[in-house]
Amino acid sequence: MSSHELRLEGLAVRYGHASAVTGLNLTAPGGTVTALVGPNGAGKSSALLAAYGSVPSTGRVFLDGEDVSRLKAAARARAGIAVVPQGRQLFPKLNVADNLQVMAELLGLPRSAVDIAIDRFPILRTRLKSLVGVLSGGEQQMLVVSRALMGSPRVLLLDEMMTGLAPLIVQELLRTVTQLAAEGVAVLMAEPALGAVRGGVARGYVLVRGEVVATCEDGGKALDAVYQSKMGVLKTAAH
Ligand SMILES: Nc1ncnc2c1ncn2[C@@H]1O[C@H](COP(=O)(O)OP(=O)(O)OP(=O)(O)O)[C@@H](O)[C@H]1O
Image (cartoon, rainbow, N blue to C red; front, side, top):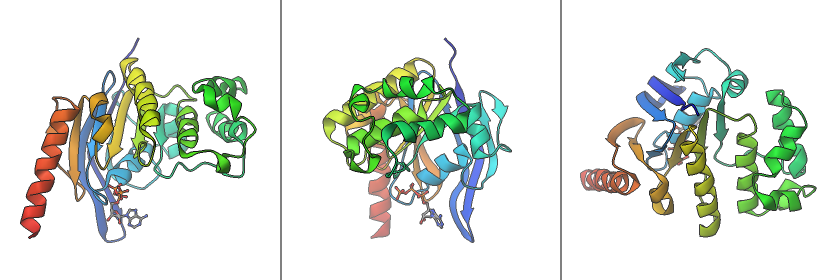
């Protein structure tokens, strides 16, 4: 079983004159879940989308040591980087099976890949012909995770995956994600607060205004404490 790695070196994202991410250095090794925590607007989504290749950036992105910075998003997806985007980006007027088929085609996978993806969460099989727009938030998120895993990715980027979901769904998704990490997938999870997922996180980075202000290798609980203390300092400084 091989363990994968995502490495970002000097990653920077700008929107016009505004800087969203500045010189981000980060490593997400397989075997564990790495978190990227930070308040709204910190640049978490921008960093993940830049790693995936769907927003322009400077700096370098390495997948298992290989520089993929020059590849477009579709090529990075085929190389093994998958994303669960904030807002899910499903096709609400297509059914569950057809949403998965779109990704199968993007990745050049056979029709059987759709069946395998559906079986990842049993509830999806019962909703196969349902339009995605009528699924619950939890069902939609399971579909997005199944879709992200279709190409057996080496790197999995999760952008606020747990926001607004019921605790039972959060725990089910967290089990799936920690299992994938244990199998060697490099998992990078961006969240504005660790909350219920603390237990699944092994290490992480605190991002504020596009910059890493702290790192932690001692588990989710310790990372949360570091994050809280950084936010406290920022609040105090603002007063
Ligand atoms: N498409 C865009 N055009 C212009 N500015 C943007 C765009 N996307 C994000 N930004 C800005 O970049 C900064 C970082 O946003 P980003 O969404 O990456 O942060 P975030 O940490 O993911 O926040 P959130 O939790 O609110 O999604 C913010 O100031 C945001 O307003």
